[in-house]
Amino acid sequence: MIYGLILITVLVILDQVTKLIVSTNMTLFQSNPVIDGFFQLSYHINDGAAWSMFRGQMWLFYIITVLALGIFSYYFKSVDFKNKKVYSIGISLMIAGTIGNFIDRIRIQGVVDFLDFNIFGYDFPVFNVADICLNVGVVLFIIAVVIFDD
Image 1 (cartoon, rainbow, N blue to C red):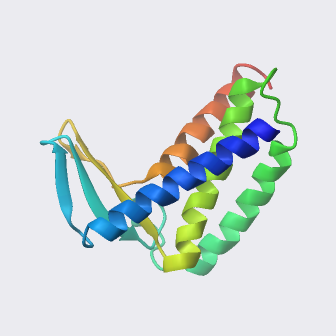
Image 2 (tube, rainbow, N blue to C red):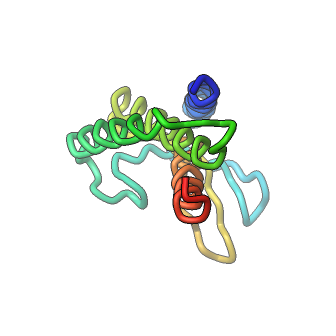
């Protein structure tokens, strides 16, 4: 369980530090190309969920976040980095991502997003490190439950 707590702590710090760097060095809606036509840093604050769904409904996000953290914490009790690596990493990533975005929602009533990709002409929604943790964590958790039967 200690490895999970370390992983969660490191990822939440990484998420918050990257958001701080962007928010202190860029103006809102500013974009800086990194790989022309493919990747740019774009400073946005999203007051909704993915793709800005349910914009401004902070009370809903607070309730969902507390419920999600409760569920994830229940599953976190069974992490075992020796015998259930994929499961343990997945749960830890989901907790880290949830905490990272929850900190923003409490602090600024929205989430700092800055990773902006244009993939084969599709302008993918801007996201952050916590979002990566959540998405990768969900995929790993599903793989662990469906394939490894953890």
